Length: 148
Image 1 (tube, rainbow, N blue to C red):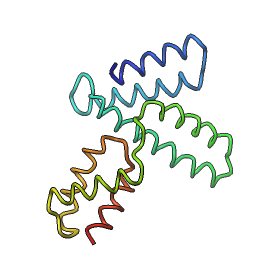
Image 2: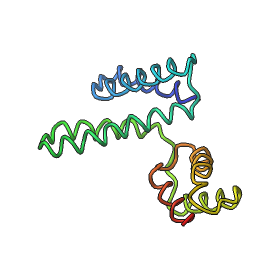
Image 3: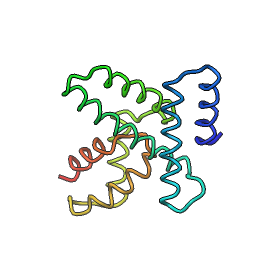
């Protein structure tokens, strides 16, 4: 089942159960997915592209949590945490530290990258192969580590 169908199905179930927070979050997600599709001039996004949209939405909420915490608005921070939990249901299982290191080493070996000048090529390949299962910042740190 495609990710788009899973989201639609979860939204229907949330509506039946009257889970207002979940309904709100899933509607916002569908809107973000539709907006991304319009930007790419496509009718529908692939599962990989949807994972990217979900990751961006999670990142936005993490930034909001930091701001709300600084402003001492814990009730709003809690709402954002709940939305993150709902969104994470649609992401594939995250890669372990060991898996990320192995992937980075393998790509560096395959691309025969020697220094940081070739970091862009390595990052592009690593991110594509990670398939939304790894944090981009963590991958970047590992690539820098192995490219000196």
